Image (cartoon, rainbow, N blue to C red; front, side):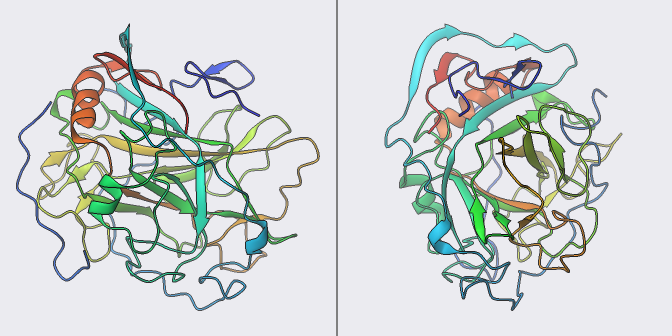
Length: 371
């Protein structure tokens, strides 16, 4: 089991998991919805040149043991997750960020798996069991009935810092199609960064409470921009399909979210078009004037001795099994940070070219624990 202490080392080369209060525009709930430096973030190299494409909510009718609408799975084999912390876990140590050598600003956190279900409060709010199976981390209470208020104020936290970060994070679960057993990730690295694609660190604004978004396409049957797969310890560029990794490494799914917000909508009908990806040489495109941190999920599945990954597929991989696994990679993010803590790390870690490791807030305080 991977050690999850502060300063965690991962990988064959002992890879370090380093893995403001600004004026905000007025925001409104979505209409008609229920309540010059580096050119790409680490781990991804194919930013979309335009606003996120529109996509309809998932309406697949392929049942999975009568649970949701993805690949079949055995609900009795869902692995238990961690309960998370019921309190804020912040300590003052005096530890401060270090300057980056590439102009990139980096705040990161480490999370543990919380639970799985077939809910999606962004795409199918108020509709229990309407989705394919998801893996959740961050807020321990996320389900179909979750709202901006419940995510901000209820639930334990399974990421560093405990309840300072009740954000809902989720992605399609990995299922072993040989056994119908869902597979739990060992841990998840979440990055909040800037300094790419002509968006300067000092331009980054705090993320508004209640903001939510989806990245990637659950219906994809071929390569996508902004999502991918790799063997974590081996490194290198992401690939479009799930990778076969050696024992001791991790099959890693990466999802990168758009960072340019339209400044007014907390959601949109397709859960994407209120956000856009930055454009090389231009930064945020017209109509998306508010730059936020680039959020990236890195979801790590361990390959242990005797592990057979040949049957692993995403719960949303409903295309023919003869095709490679992993094309339908995507992720959902629903803001649940405590605003004062978020503004602290935005100012201390993202508004200037420094790295805060995977625990520092940038003001001499650190987030403790890993769920």
